Amino acid sequence: MNAASKESDSTVAAAGDDVRRDWRTRLAETWPDAVRLLAGAMLAYLLARVLHLHEAHWAVLTALITSRGHAGGAARAGVERLLATVAGAGIAIGAAWLRHTWYIDSGIILFLALAPLCLLVAVKPDYRGAPVAALIVLSAGPAAGLGPLDTALLRTGEIALGALAAMIVSALVFPARGRARPRAHAAAVLHLLGRWLRIAFAHGETDAKALDRLREEIRHELRELTILAHTSGWKKMQDKQLERLLKCVSALNADVGFLVRAVARKPLAQVVEVLRAPVDEVAQSLIVAIERVGAAMSKDAAVAADTEIEAKLKALALAARAQAERVEPRHVHTLIFLFGTIGTDLGYLRAMLGPAQTAADTAASAPADG
Image 1: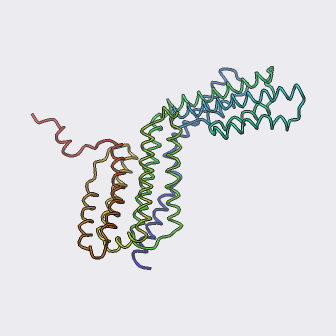
Image 2: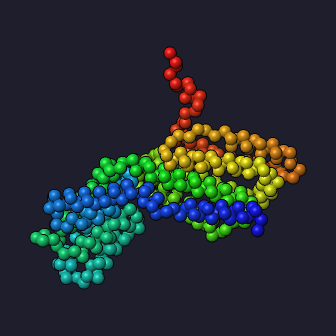
Image 3: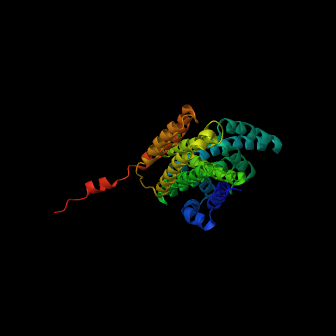
């Protein structure tokens, strides 16, 4: 095994070890989410006890289900669950009336209740709680002193109370988590993409299983970021900055993946082999830039514009001219374009973080002596 192969294998192994973080680190990062979840559940229970509701656990269950990173996301989840409950409870009330009036078999009643609700879920997946609500109403006996209709209304009120508790907690308890969590996932994606590029340009054999684990970690972080973006509120009121962050990170992931696949095949593999030194310099500058933006993202700090990537691309173009008889210019231009798209993606992410104050800006803004 040559030195390049050993370096590549060690890089992949290190990446896998870094990705599988210690549980203490995860606990230190996520304990505010546990506090928010617990606070929502206990607030729902407290409100249910204050209002003397018969079964407070339905409110607690709803608070646990509808808890989100954003207050708007909790409101959306709560209202959707409430509407689903109303639909399910309405169907269940009709089915219960048929059962008590005509003494219809429970299996037929269950079919009549679930058939329209399953169709509703097929059309509107957000209302997947409707069949569950119907089953709760049908399976639970009437509350003490209440009939089937009153019991269904009571369940609906308890669910609304739980959704309200989740919204209050999302807005008041660690409200900054709504901004910190998406950026933490985005930063994790950037760090993993930097490792992927480092492995791709190590010029040696890699451990396929370790590389698959690395890509799975990237997909996992992107899924978490996507969930946060899609549950940040209603479609017309969603967090636009979070949507832009998701689009930029997804575009960067797609461009890095395309570059890695392209340089592993002809004709770009030949270009990389002939122009290895300048290509490695461009790749290294991209890796440093990605990790720098990722570090700034995790700290919610601005990062200065990077001119090194452009300089390295120009050096690559000059080196290609000197090797014009060995590489075709169109293939070199394709490689430079692929590198450039990653640099452009990083530029969009830097813009989202805001302008960084340079040394010249600091000197200009400093108060004059005397």
